[in-house]
Image (cartoon, rainbow, N blue to C red; front, side):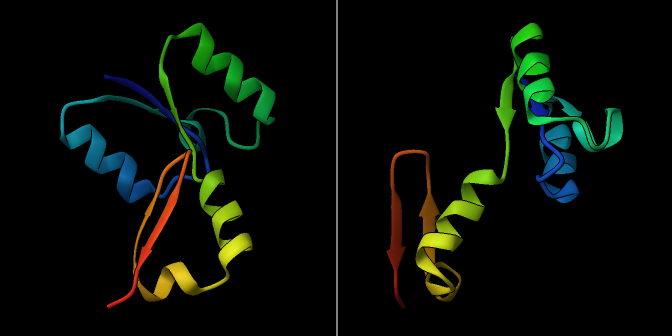
Length: 84
């Protein structure tokens, strides 16, 4: 799978995806500091999956540290927080 990882994605995740056999491009290595609009254009031009951690920021803003103190699954459509 072709993946474009935004700068907000941890480099360890990018390395793991590469080891798993995915074709991963990393904005932090390609063009650090480019605007979000440019990242979207890159993803669209190359027909790749865009991986970004921005969704994580919005979840933390809405739930505070609650997801960090539990088993949490974050997707585009839902946040599930299961306390131990």
